[in-house]
Amino acid sequence: MRIRLTATAKASYDSAPDAVQRAFDKSAALLAASLRHPSLRAKKYDDNKDVWQARINSNWRFYFQIVGDAYVIHKIIPHPK
Image 1: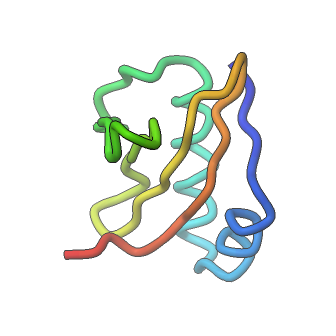
Image 2: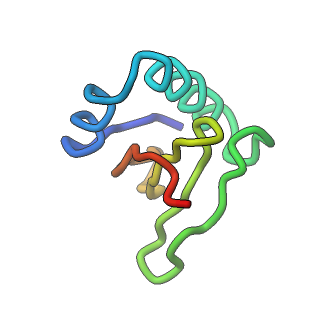
């Protein structure tokens, strides 16, 4: 599967700290290899909109949809606790 970032996700990525960017890059590679990789803890976030959530680290998450043969990343944000 391919990874695509929306303009919003790209802007979030660019403004995130360097450590978060590196962690996201690793998480995105894991996602491309397997949605079920344990460290991602990927889960359906919104069934109605078919939006998924996955873990970058303990404080950051990314939100995506599966569109054809791509994971489309919509948001990269601090985890709302």
